[in-house]
Length: 256
Image 1: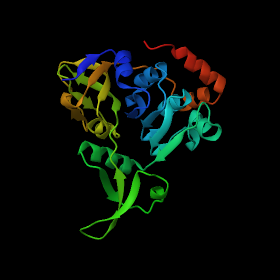
Image 2: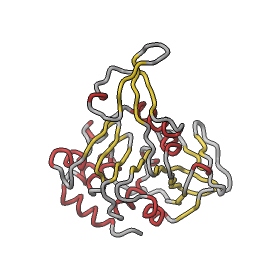
Image 3: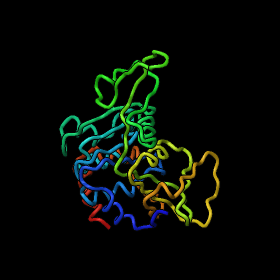
Image 4: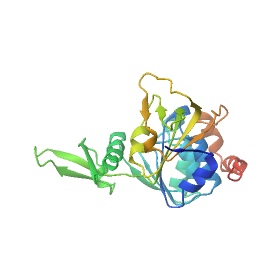
């Protein structure tokens, strides 16, 4: 059974400099509160895995926490990558950023391989040239059919952090739709932290939701929804200017 803990303390314990940290989930199911704690702890040289490099990933990049980013797509207003992401790539501010790009199915296959204890996963070769640019992807010939398939190295995060609506008192968590890659990332990880809106006596079944048994989790932290969180267009406006972004960063303060 996972421990029910205070968020700041568990982030400080699980997320160390140089760790591989997966943060999955979109919209109001993204783990923003945990990302802010990582920033407050001033963690460095993280290998961050997030299928969408969006406003959440942008915070960590702009704060200098990220040494390398494993992602499937960059998502910002106007179909452009978010501003801190662009600044890190074009001007190395606040530090250079290394990228490891995959498709979303390839990231799912990498998580799945790690969860199964396998060294790599396979998926149909789409003709992409990513294998020529990404060390964790190659093409292999199927020994049964002779078909060329893509092979991707297993990805086992040191810690996965996701957000969910509810956990019950036995430590089971319900992941509501859209699932994204939250389930796969949790099962692949060495440690898993879930932040939730609330803890309830019994989970309220929801269409399409998945229940993750508490046996797969390390810790649960209650984090009430934050309606004033700058996201998407609001974030792009704030983060486009270094001075405004730095002021926002300073306003986060120290670990809580």
